[in-house]
Length: 91
Image 1 (cartoon, rainbow, N blue to C red):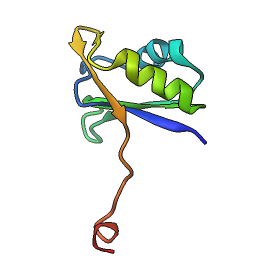
Image 2 (image 1 turned 45 degrees about the vertical axis):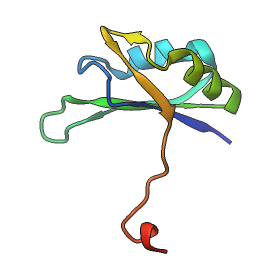
Image 3 (image 1 turned 45 degrees about the horizontal axis):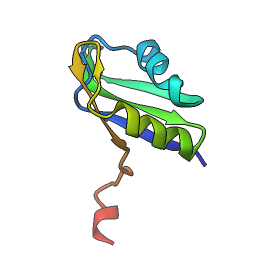
Image 4 (image 1 turned 90 degrees about the vertical axis):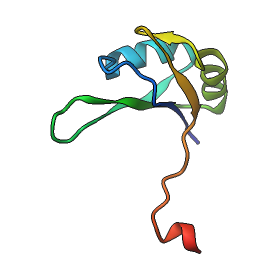
């Protein structure tokens, strides 16, 4: 099972997916990486995600990268929260 580490919301607005992948692949195999962008402008919203192939890689990245400097900003790294729709919150 893959785990996702989420970088929220402190990414530099110039940080792109190749930069994010390069920084995080030091901790294990990166399965997927994404920087969330505004649909209208195409500019980064300042947060993204990194998905690893193992729990060990995810844990290592969280322990090592949280509050570290990336392109001039201290980033916050945590496990991504499950997406919950309106109906999921009221079960």
